[in-house]
Length: 261
Ligand code: BTN
Image (cartoon, rainbow, N blue to C red; front, side, top):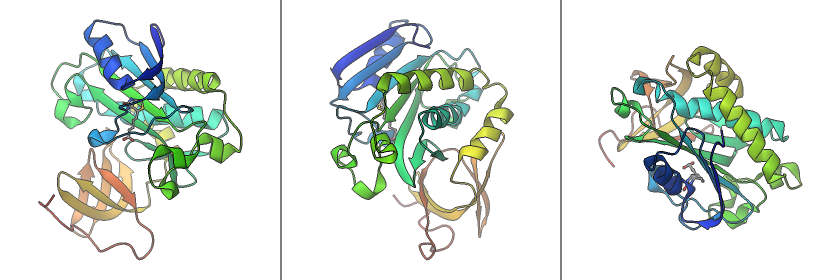
């Protein structure tokens, strides 16, 4: 990791810059970090508030494996990011598929995009040239500075009560990502750690994907990292979706709005 490093005071999006570098042929491990992103992006093209104090970074990965293994990258990266957060003292939990929570609030988001688009089942069977792995870590910030609903997000500073050394955090991230991605072929072992670090399994959840909303209980991950959801209509296997953990009384029961956006 960090074979080539670019550090920017301000950038539109590290994700876009890393993609440019990937197209220019830069090697596996190329790292782009920005103190501020003016056009930070989350999943589904959403705005990602990226003021000074956060750790906004993207890595060019050239995984060297078949594209059929691409869906494993998000879960594998989530394990690495969770372990890095634990190393700096944050009790972080993985919310499937790509969020890290602390105290039930989002502290970090992961965005894995391949040469063929989002890293999902859709890219299987196509050659995998590169993956851009973006990590947005709410570090030395006030949650109110992130431009989202305060109750839904947290920061490392809020959780620890003090600032974190961003270089130490970056080192922890890179070494844990390197270690986890290095054993992606042994995905059973990665998933074992994922199960120990997650906060989704066992929860009642509402999932929105492709215009439908499904409710059920998250029961397990498949061998390839898809979420198994037990619903009144049977077990559903999901490779992506927006997950909401339901509190008691929130659930409406089963498949809600199939086919509607
Ligand atoms: C999400 O939870 O929706 C994923 C958020 C990913 C944000 C990071 S910040 C660094 C990189 N650059 C971007 O524009 N996005 C990712």
